[in-house]
Amino acid sequence: MTHDDDRGPAPMPSGRPSSGAIVPEGMQRSAAFAPINIALSKYWGKRDHERNLPLAPSVSVCIAELGTLTIVAPNQDLDGNVMLINDKPADQKALVRVGRVMRAVRALAGTEVRAGVRAVNTVPTAQGLASSASAFAALARAATAAYGVDLDDSELSGLARLGSGSACRSIHGGFVLWQRGELDDGSDSIAEQIATAEDWPLRAVIVHIGEGPKKTPSGEGMRLSAATSPFFSAFIDTCFRDVSECLGAIAGRDFERLGVVAEANCLAMHATMLATRPGLLYWQAATVEVMHTVRRLRAAGVGAFFTIDAGPSVVVICEPGAVDAVSTAVGGIPGVVKLTRTRVGGGAHLVPNG
Ligand code: DP6
Image (cartoon, rainbow, N blue to C red):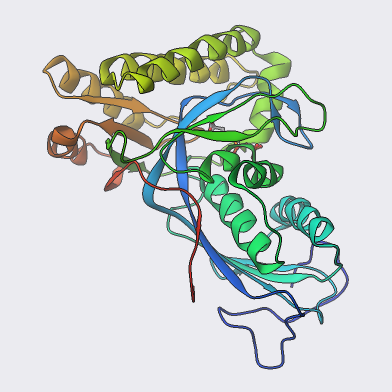
């Protein structure tokens, strides 16, 4: 069994506390679900790698249905946190990130009690579909409830950010702005909701495309781009303008304006990635074919635009009437393994009896 502080084996919770597990006074086993989010103006560059503080603000939407369910069970018999992800022991890298969040929660609760953590993703990991965003948002929500720590959603977003930067945007639902912040301690680098899913009920088609050779993880890719891509600083400058443009488009519910800026920002991030040395090429052939298809549909009057994170899969944001046309057009493209028809949805929430 793997631990965040290597103090020998300990029992795992398997959904329910095992018989004999001791849940300390003032704490309770808690479960939370958090959705994935997809950025419309991207986060690709950090001013602080320990705290996951970004060089630029970003804007995202939460995607309903796909995400992570996480259970946190405090147990005073444990010597270190233990964690399962999709029923497999978490690797060392994941444990280090989980450890950052759990240490902050323990400090807020004023306790040294460790916990068993079990996370189940309803989104495939490593297809560029932000499973770390949903995972750390769910962890922050469940762990604070489990340890009896009362944080508002902005504070909770700062806690989730310690695990993965983009996770701060999965605390709130709907349309979300992650502020860059100026302070060294990151306390002003938090996410806020700018419109709810009900305010602007857009749809999404997730086009799942299988992974090729092992991809470079986001944090490592950001370091490489900052160090070697000739487009990096131009991209960061672009993000400030694109975030303002996204906010204007969302405030005016202007779908066409949002699509123009979101596609341009996505392509600018991928141009920065491609010009990194060695080049970060996350796309597969099917990724490019989906982009062309969405543009053809749009030229024919279908309300849809694409965006892509650090992986081959594509998220197509649609006006409500466009979902069938998009699904039909992209479903048959070779290399597309699955479609999920969904919508902009709510944020992280506790799951009673989860
Ligand atoms: C391409 O949030 O996964 O999806 O902070 O190192 O965990 P860490 O990175 P992560 O990066 C996400 C990058 C992106 C763009 C985005 O979501 O804005």
